[in-house]
Length: 498
Figure 1 (cartoon, rainbow, N blue to C red):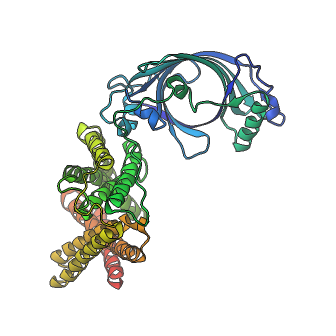
Figure 2: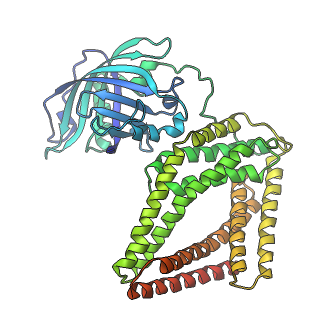
Figure 3: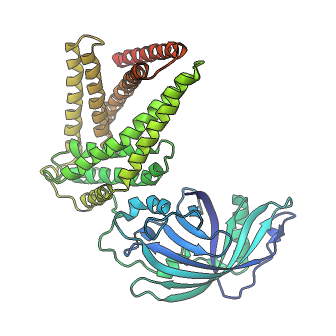
């Protein structure tokens, strides 16, 4: 399916019906305006019965008429006065239910198992005028709208109003600022709602269960439960935020979502007495499985990037490039498809609901009311002791033996656990916590590089054994293996210096 995303930057105003539009050419030096065009726009907006999309400042609509008819998903943006808009034309829409699949996937982490149903219909009589600069470049469009909206929610009604919109096309911030002052002077007023839909449905009805759980504050007198809930909510929000980016395979998205899943599970395992025994076990188990699914795609992503970097320094023959680039790309694409399937299952969506419930209504454990600093200190100390024991155990093995290499892997995992535990208490601002976290991160970083070389060399050996290669390819493969061995030894040397 072909979907296109754009950034919608616009101003919206309430106006009295029939208020004449001002002359817009004066907004731009030597500018001009196009011939006004009139359209009838008929839109149906979709949401769950408890309007969870609207609560998350997200709108999903099907609109006929105008210059961009089709399906549109609008979401918040970090750019001021802007929203991200993902559009799918009617010709390109592929359905799995009543909403195009690509848009349903993008809101899955918000909607969960809820059903998307029509919640409002909005008809707009629009007169649209383009604003051009001296070179004929379209900078913005000005819309005069007469709106008739009907809420399909229980108790909803019909409302009519007039509004103006000024949307940038190829213009800039100063133009937007000038337009705001200019239109206000012409009689426009601050919009009473952020969107047509918000005005159509009015104040949101009380939901039976809010999914937008507020993180509890963590102050000097915070309890251990306050800390755990705060951290769980923080990483839950990160997980949900990266979900749609992972589905579209955006750069670094899989890595960030995987880290969020691991940090969530780390909190549950690092503070076992803060929540009631067994209360978080189902969520912890599912988070482990989710981390594994994301890990498969992420590991192949790292492997592919490494192979591309290594071969960039070599005059490698075509058969080796096929084995290390094209074949690895195929393997990763399979892993990404499996990952997307996993994120579409009821099991994953139920995990998000269960995580929300754990945050919103946690069952206190034995340490729940203890001071957060005390419980965090114990958890961090315990994770650090486990790391040190693993480091001391390394002495029992011959250097570079398989057992020694495996023990370095164990140290890396213990360091990662210690780092996550220390970072979970960062809001408590204890220098000793920060020092342990920094040390554990350094250990994890160096041994992570070494672990990557071990995985890469194992994969290179598999390619050499199972793939028919030319002598030239085998020669280059040997060079790559030697370079990875040297990189691994350098990483271990850096770890030992710690």
